[in-house]
Length: 73
Image (cartoon, rainbow, N blue to C red; front, side, top):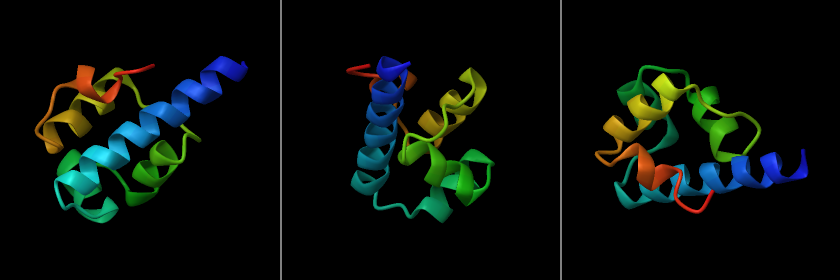
């Protein structure tokens, strides 16, 4: 269980880093990905893990590959 928590945190860090590099707010990313801002907040904090579909929607909104978001996990 401990390893899953670390992985969730790393995924969240990757999403946040890509979002900031694109100059997007959490609200703007959520709008582009078709989800609620609270979803992005939970993901970036490592408190939630996205479905595969959501991961691809976030990657598309960030104009990157999903593999870049899971890098280091």
